[in-house]
Image (cartoon, rainbow, N blue to C red; front, side, top):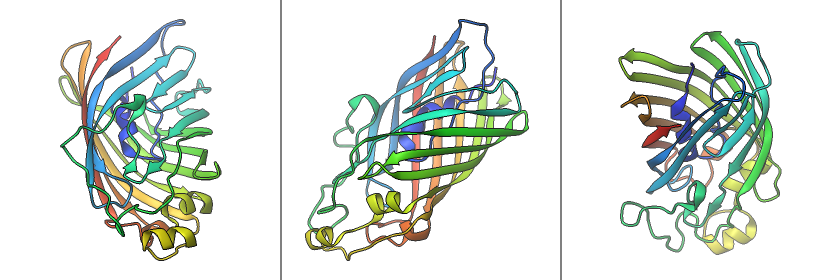
Amino acid sequence: MKTHLVLALAVACGAACAQTPATNPMPDGSRDMYVGLGVSAAPDYPGADARRTEALPLLQAEWSNGIFIAGMSAGWHLSRDPQREFGPLLELDRGRDQDGSRSGAGGVSPMQGLAGRQASPRQGLYGVREVGARLQAGAFANYYLTPSLRVANSVLYGAGHEHNGLTWNISIQQVATDIAAHHQLTFSAGANLVNRSYNASFFGISAQESMQSGHPAYAPGGGLRDAYLGAGWNWALSPDWMVVSAARVTRLGGDARNSPLVERPTNITVSTGLVYRF
């Protein structure tokens, strides 16, 4: 069974980081489900200097008909070819308020006293329009170079102020590989490309926002949003319990990097959690 369990922590990675679980052939009518609770430490928003720590529910489920849920995304494996994976994909973009990324799935709020800054005038997102949560729709297509190495693509549309932000994530992923008894590692490297509407919503500053925030007006175009390297570690405590941990280094690029909202172009996100398998 191929399991890419670290992806249950994808909710902590921000927009355009959706990654689909590997196809898992199962008997008809069966399912494979993991639920748990994790903790994530991440920047307040992509490019922020301040960080926050959140408690996050973890969820990954797969059914024999190909339908899956992974964090805040859901999709359907339509291919029966073990070398290719493709299908429709839905993902919830959490948006952003004036304190940064909104709380995690299920409404779990950031842990008080562990992290975070208080917004002050002329700093960070103060005076910048909030971005509402949006349901994005699109598709994924993955190709296996080897049984454990795949090139993954996902395209999602619907984020941003006007529901017309487009993101394309392309990555190469080393799916779960045994390194010792009960221990697996995963690796990934990728990039996110976005359209003008997406960048305008998350990195742009209108004339009105400029007057309110003190930041200069900025109208970014589309292109590269960021590139990243990630690693994950799965530790099976028993057949039913597993510790999943992940780390990701992200570097903003293109017009996103040049936004006045960006305080630190390189961000690190780390997360860990305990899950139970049903």
